[in-house]
Length: 451
Image (tube, rainbow, N blue to C red; front, side, top):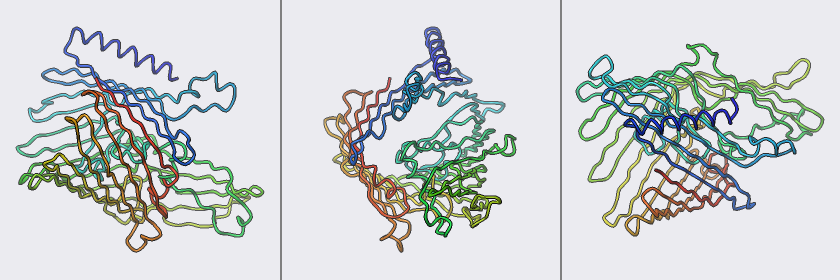
């Protein structure tokens, strides 16, 4: 379906719901977000995105309905030929869809059982935005450092309330992958494929690259995922344990073919989404008015081997190695925050492993610190120190480290309007997220409006 048809359907739906709201208890809201990023080094526009999200809700005694259409333009115009100027999809990278659409049924079959069916956001975990236990919904990694963004998935979620305990069960019949960034930012998450150090490639340079992804077979046993969680409140702390069975939502290489074409080496990669089991634990509370939280997830992956081939007649296998070990590994977050009497607020988190860092050998350590202060009755907020430090291990800190600095000013002209102005600066060495963003220092301006 072309974007025009999608847009028309969304518009007709919005008109229908809006007219229905005049005769029913339907609440209407939404927000607009516009962001522009300018690269410091080459003065090029790095990103220009505009997102409009609407939200329609209807609540009855026995059920609750929510539908949230979303219209987004992302990136810059791509026009290589004159014919592209006749194609609005080339001029505007427009996405029209629905971020959430579900119905809540209260006291379903049992007085203590609620069920939610439809496309929904399910985010488990107590840490601030970075949640190792939150694996039900795939990550929206298009913003690179905008941690915590998720994509809605078609699913069934049940919550059973027994005394002080909540037993949750989620079932996803269809697998949904994560969203990756466009353009040069993709290299910050997925490193460049190296050319083997072998005589066959000695006089060649990097040529064309092709990337093929193997999706799970379209049968329920291959595409479905499920998760369970038991949560309660103990000694002033929220506490939960969870289990997830599904797949990684960022693909992993299992085969790379190299083709020597004259002075060039062309590369063909094959990727897939391995299965994984995840056992999670989290808690959150406070002590002496200081917020505390901890979250940990034990990943138990399936083993994935990567085969390297030099194409020809016949193809020659030039290597094979483990790209994902079946050995379990732990990702975790420990954090704290506090607001001083003068209104100065800080947030500190120690993070081991991000969503795109898959496998025990690919995890990095991060220290994330944010400080902010509000002025003029919270009309102005200054964030002078948002700092991200990353290292692979302490033994390799000199050759593999990253530093990110993001000072920011936020202005609130009214309750529903926000303007953000800031800079994003990174530096580092080695193969880590911050080091690979070294050439993406930028100035950003974001406008957010809600109604």
